[in-house]
Image (cartoon, rainbow over all chains, first blue to last red; front, side, top):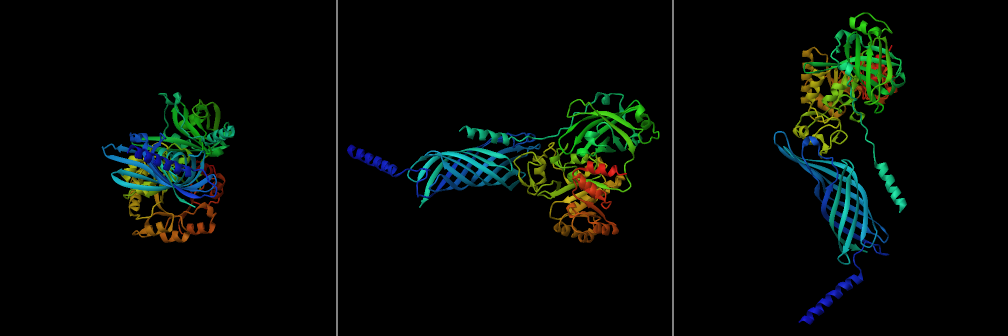
Length: 201
Length: 422
């Protein structure tokens, strides 16, 4: 019995090694191979500015907020890759209490729609940079609920390390700077990232 | 690799942007604050106006200056200001005056609108240099009144000499409405208060304006407020997380959460703005620039109410509703008795006649439209041109003697060219 377990373990290890031998996930180009790769990320963003909540409101800002993003990259057979990124970021939020004791809450959020360029630095380490639009929205809940929107230009810069899970998948950690120019809001993000090479030709 | 670091350092250096600001200089002057220095009488102030030749100081301010008083009322207190309008670099002085024995002291500051230069100014009219004549009401002629003093940069002790010598009375043969944009000027010009605030309206006449143009929008709950831009933005308000059109927010929300950028002022309601005009300033004219498309009845009611309030005080005040586009034209002419509503029409003369606007307001880029202005004048209407900011253009339009008013961001230079006319 123990021999069978040992054999099964050996077989599994061989299978893993054989998969790795066939090739694990990498962002580095391979001659003649093209693919589309999806990055799905979630994590926290830190609003790094002291500005944002005026002193007269006498409140403190919540600087850590959730950030999610989805990125589709086209991997050609050369070093530079390009793609599109979107997601949802809350730059910051805060609560207020007015002079009559009335409570309220404000959050400033954005949906980025960015054209992203990427390059592999090593087999598993990539850098990203891009620019495009941020659809900003304020959500105010004070006396009445208001959602107000505004368009802004902006950019992104990021770096990620991908640990290969298989030939077409990987798990990564990404550091990212999201910036909307209109409101001078920047968010420094750390995200866990699932990477999936979902189409090859 | 070193090259990359150099480029990075260069980018960081270029990214560091200098923040400009203009703070009012500290205007404390012990002599001016002394117990013996007392307020000037009305009769003295009325005489201490006119066109003055600049001697020392002409390099910085030009060869002529126009001196004119204005005032602000705050409750039962009235403060009088002597504005000195100069040509060079669109400069002006704003002073307060007191009598000290047989002399007159003038204390305040100067500013150049072409940049951020400003500083203290301390002036004196000695008894021998005309102070006694002004204080006793004696007749004086050209050259009899000499104002001597010093000016300096920022908060430093002023040491540069300046001299003004009386030349002639202010020009008043042909009236001109000097209308300042956005209640007193643009926030971008780093004025002492934010554009379209109740506070900047108090400054307008000190800057040389006889009237103000203010931008009217409606909040989500229909309150008319003053705000110029389509959106809340850090150009105009303190950053607070609110973005998008002001029309998305209720008045309570804006009043609690939004402050204007220069001095944390609240966004004023139209009523608060007109209250300031009627009860705190010598302004004679208000142009309500209609920045919304909707029912104009409330705006009309407020216009009527404040013209009646001014009339009850015996104060001449004309408040006109602006017609900037055809939608506003249709909204205004949908009101009952619209032909009796004082208005200023920016559309062509045909629309001006149909709305029976008392004022036609063409933009200056359309050129000097002599025939149309003559047509308007023949119908008893006036013509106000907007928005003239370049001194050469101001002179060109003013000296046609066609226009009855000029809308500008820089009323001090319009006042200068107007009042120094021979």
